[in-house]
Length: 380
Image (cartoon, rainbow, N blue to C red; front, top):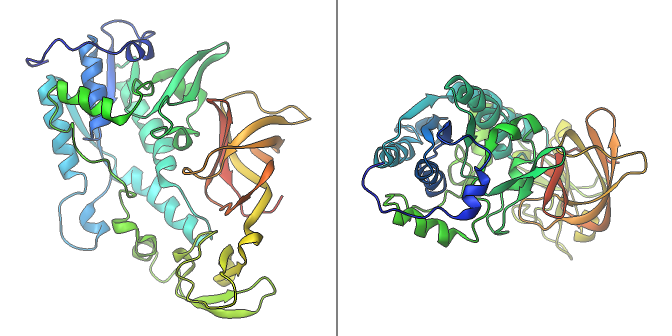
């Protein structure tokens, strides 16, 4: 490391990396932001043989349909600058093709199927963890370390995934698809921080130029949140106008494409009436948007597919847990039943509004992540 003060490493960071052999080679996934940059600095300070890796995932010029440099250009430069400051090797890997197939194509197809996808989960599940973990092993690493705000805790049957100490920063909802095998190789040293201000202050103490860099807010390949434009670019003509109908099937109006809507949405319908109307469901076969009163959004049952269990699946009588159905909502009590080889049936203790197919349903026992899956369109 270039000349920096002798900065104490917080004890919770030491504990997060305590089971990695001293001086071992580790790969740090560096996005160019403050979280992953501080992660690299802390690992370097602890004496590990740190290798920084940044992924080139997509072309911003294509994303905004105009000439331009790669979207990650500035982020790659920031990551390289930090690596230079820390005197660690830094590699940029071209994963654009993998990202397009595993994340963007899935995102587009999901929207056209009447769902509301979460591409950040797919990215973590495929490109960042599955693919990058394999690359980290090829580089001789004994662990891969990321700047995610979650905790990896020792359990009687192996490592467990837990929520971060700071609930405002917790990212466990987006990491539910992390497998038990991947969790063996992963480490998350930022999960024990009490808040982002503490992270930025420590990054500043290390002299990292990104200490005050703003957090990214939007989906990286969707400019200004216009999902339908991204879908149209990748599947020209696949979406188009269709009817807006009430629960009885009466046509109330027309819309310009189902990709502009999600369950629970009120704005953008262009309808007037005696009471507000909300999107209840989307029927992609006829490009139909079904609307109704707010009370009709309430659900007490739902089904999950592609379950990833980080704890033993439920026995025959089910499992008491909490479920989080949107990243911005608090978990609610539920009864969980296994369904088939990779599904689950959920009975909610209290009604939840706006349960959207394509979103994640993540199960918790206190702070521990039990597993999760994708909410289906089918009623339970």
